[in-house]
Image (cartoon, rainbow, N blue to C red; front, side):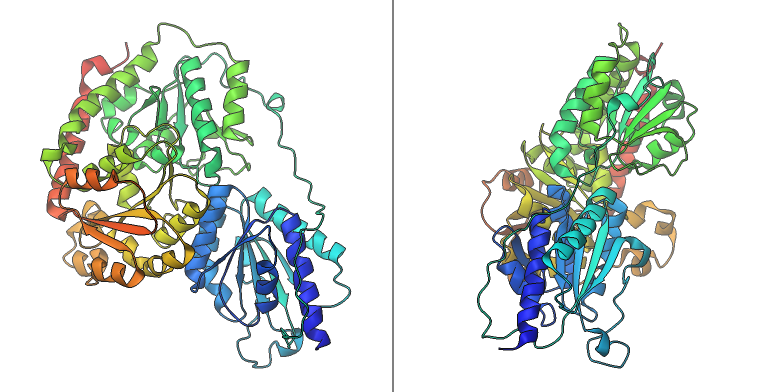
Length: 575
């Protein structure tokens, strides 16, 4: 039996045991030879769930979804060469979204570097400034004791979870990587020196900016790092809004799109200059990232009122440079503490009633456009999907038009329902794969809402679903390409169809058949509602909904006109 193979087994087992002891519970791995010692060690660790994915690009997004759903770092394991480079899109999204990942890339030993050896490149700091932590390890050596590796693992996991980003361990192995004569080994978690940093308490923060405000406003932007905290946050922020008499402007990704205190959608309400001017707050309390709505973002940027941002990891998510105070606390805990610290808001609550009245009138104007007999268009599809999502359900929505339509045309979500999206960098890549990762860690049903381009862009993810054992329903808006470009100035360009809309010829039915997914073409809103109401069953089901672009464009325009009419109603203006 080779001594090198035995050292590799011990080294890999001690490293994986240290990571398990530090709290690593999921690893998404792709097959390879150089990573075999680590792959075998993970497979031999009973406390780590191993998910095998052929395509490293898909694997990266699956890990992203798992980490977002669990709120803990998830491992990515690959072989040497170009493999780790396929993680780059997911790494960038994780960095921008504040989602913790741990990349474990296998590598050749130093003597094979920079000499033309096969499948070898300089992997040190492969992700550059986009990784919050990097360490080269190996080859296996007695100097790498279990205690040393426990410290290495603790620092990597702490960096990823505290910063909300990507830690990278590049691990070199010499051949032979494995020997059939090796004794079997069960990898057990070892003690970890991790010391979780204490968050600053509420008492350390000065709440005077919020005290005494009579026209306060709560804005909940995308919160994409830890879906498990969403139900507590929703309850706490709604209780705070009711206590103070402050309206809540929450997009679906803000986790507060339920309850009577939620008003909007801001994207449509604030389009009228008179309404926007009459509803300027004297203080804004923000949670999450900058809003998806451009109209709301522009309005916030030009306000003179002080803005307070609550962001658990202390990231200053403020492209308008308007934040007066940054509070590094978890949103739910902050709301609970603030509610206890501040007296109830004044009554009668004219300010709150004005927002609620405008919101109710807007809903009355929009509802007929989304009725069953009004035809199939993107806004109505988003509304039906949102209405069908049960309490405890998870909806992953593509980061293009679907996330905007959900914001504008789905006024309420069931309590306990959660919406997720890759809104760190707002790309459509990895939409399905990310949803698969979220589904693997989510107890309730999972639904995906995306366009045809987002679905086809992640065809590899669709092919990987069966191997992962994922169960989900995917609603695909089939509008023959990138419909969002119809609503941009580029839509008037004579070559916009070929250069920007880029319609595809691939058929979803055939792709689904190859992936072992069920496919159903849905032609009406009642059909869609009925399909979404069916009991969940194992596997992936794709509901393809044709939405002709000309009709869709006309319905969006009609909705925007009706929104302005609702905002202009005199009863909606505060006196």
